[in-house]
Image (cartoon, rainbow, N blue to C red; front, side, top):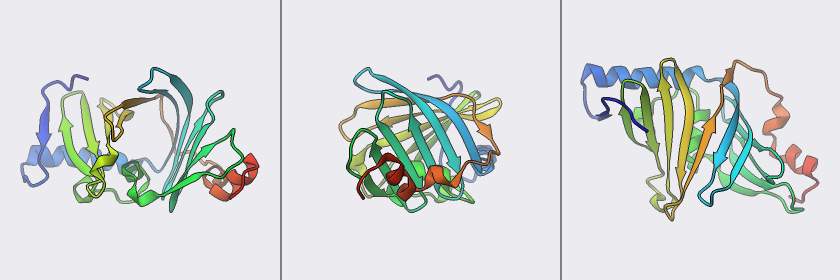
Length: 197
C-alpha cells in the first residue's frame, strides 16, 4: 500500500515531527478500550473467511469466524486459545504475552517501549507498524495498517515463519461497547463447544 511521502520513525531520534507521529499512534491505541468490527481474512492459499473481532482492555480479544470456518481465537489476558469448533479436543494454548498482536490489548501503550515493535512507517495518509517477537524471529511478523484521516486501524498482514501472508481487513470499528465477559472466557468457550480441556 502506498503511504504517500513515507518516513521511517527512528525511536532513538528526538525529532519533534517523529515524536508527534509516535504520540499520535499511542493516543489512538490507548483510546481503543473496547471495540467490535467485522473482518475479512484472505489467506495465503487463496481462501477467504469472515467473522467478528472483539477487543476489551485489559487483555481480552476474540476472533469469531463465521461458518463454514471452524476457527475461533480467544485471548483472556493470560493465554491465547485457538479452537477448532468441529473438534472434540480442547484448544491449543499459547502465552498471550508472546503474541505481538497482544500489544492491542494492553493498557497505557507506548510503542517505543514494546519489544515487539520493529519499525513504524508514517505517511500523509497511513501508518504501518511492523511487529515481531525478537525472541522467536522465526515465527514471522505482523504489520498493522492505520488510516490517518481519521485515525483508524483498518488492516493487518500476518507473515508466518515460512513467508506466507494472510491479510485481515477490518470493517468499521464500533468503539466503547460493553461485550459480554463470556466472549473472552476460555473455560466457558470449551464448555459451550462441548470440548475436553
